[in-house]
Length: 42
Image (cartoon, rainbow, N blue to C red; front, top):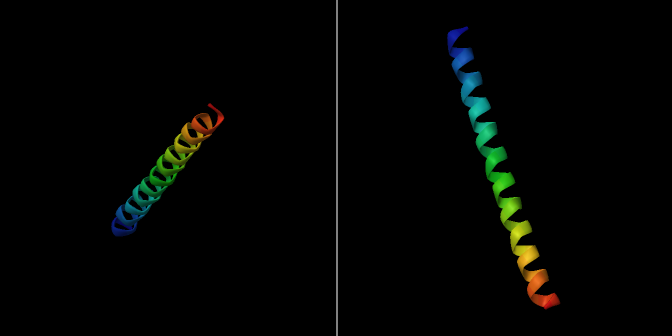
């Protein structure tokens, strides 16, 4: 039971890390897109 509990927590942390990585990469892509669109519009 204890092993499973610790394993579940490690899985949760892994999922959180993946979510933060994906969200940060999407934010970077959006910021890049806005910068490019502003540059092209100007």
